[in-house]
Image 1 (spheres, rainbow, N blue to C red):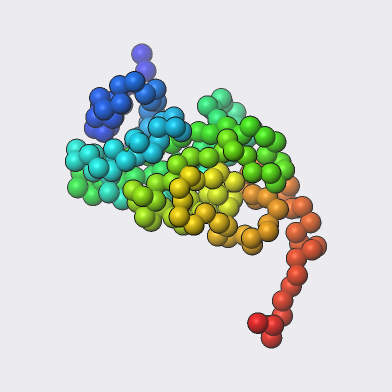
Image 2: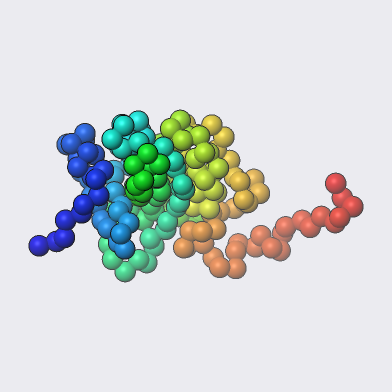
Length: 183
């Protein structure tokens, strides 16, 4: 019999979303709630607005590439939200998976790699979502300013994808170096 998870938020979410397929895991005292991508925004909104949950702080938004991961995952990429509730002194990680529909080694945007932005819930999500977009190519619907934040505008790929070449695609050889006096 698997161990039961005792995080106080899990029964609240299960009662609020009885028809949604949810999974939960725990590792070293940290609970992760796995939600479908089409319901992620709705569940995150509930976690923020519902007084018994009151996850008022978004600590981080992270992208993960599971290419070559030894165990099966529901999708190749994951978007991970790390939440905290100051009122209840709780932490919860919410994860959603997306699977590409196109070859990810190219630079063509994949319409399947898209989730809803949470900037309307936590305005501080704007820059972390831009970083996930820039490094992994996962787009965020309804983001107020979705553009690259770390790489230059015409960078030909997403460098934290595991199928991106370690030596790049010739960016170092074709990158124009500017001197100190050029401004």
